[in-house]
Image (cartoon, rainbow, N blue to C red; front, side, top):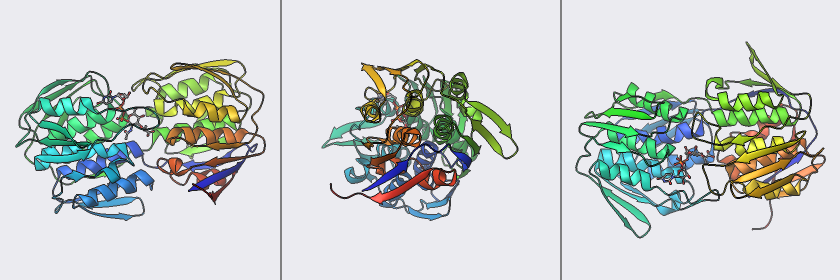
Length: 420
Ligand code: EPZ
């Protein structure tokens, strides 16, 4: 396992380019199972989770080749129908093969993903939607067994907004017989990116990006050929990095149109944004003003940026309140931030961050993907050296983050970490 050693105190000044979105690339890769041919995805980020999804597709019989940021997935021989526990336990998003497998092959055996650090994360809504489409679903030995001769269109009202649940059901509905309506659908940009790619391949989808998505099933889809959208969560993370280090970062390919709620909060905190022909210049000169955050489904404030904003608010000039409404355990970063000198009180799903004058480097441990990004931000501002262990969490969702930060003036080195 590796750790990152960061010497804090340098304002970040320079240019970072935003990579393709992990949470768009993963469903897009799963969607290739709906087709029988040579699929191509461009602007795919080089991440641990993308490689895991590639391994899963290979297990299912697809041929997967990656060349720089392009991934070629030939599903002509993808005759497998089992997503094994060994792979699914390392990445929940593996559940995204469920819908495509049932739709394309009429059968799927997918290991239950199990919970993770941030919450139990059930998939009941995925299964309820598939059953509404005529799929027989059984749970056996930690696996979901799903079977359907041919899915039929259904009118599905989701009990709650679920991103991958919406994505699974959209993909399944593309090849179902008849029309499906998904109500209370997720509106995230990554859902829209998936729907766009499916439509380009011949799917008939209306309402992507709204709470009601209508899909007219078709017999067949052409292979996907799509460019993955830029990663709004990565972009938001670097915006917070510019703010916490009181630097000036030019962020290239930031999908501003997907970050309205985030940019609004950062501006409230006093961070400045200047679009230029070279990219979006994000800068800060003083301690951030306190802003309060309530996470919610898109277009609300993204839960995936809650931890990063909390790092920024550790140095705010007052008190900031965070309410996490999506996941039941997404404050794992709080105890690690306290080790750096932050003053944070947590009551249930609410955290109150009392600003301090400065943070001090220490040894901390990453617990999940976005918590590790939060610790990187805090370390960049802390005085002295911070050692962040278990950075494999970070490598799941941030392409070349050490290189990107170093190129903007940060002092970051990656070291092998001894011991368990
Ligand atoms: C997606 O996860 C993202 N992952 C997550 O990003 C993101 O945090 C989350 O959406 C919320 O925006 C990918 O897209 C690969 P949900 P997902 O289903 O789809 C409950 C990251 O850091 N729920 O929208 O798994 C669930 O427990 C990751 O990149 C059910 O109860 O999240 C949660 O409380 C972390 N039953 C809430 O809904 C279900 O069947 C939202 O979960 C499904 C979900």
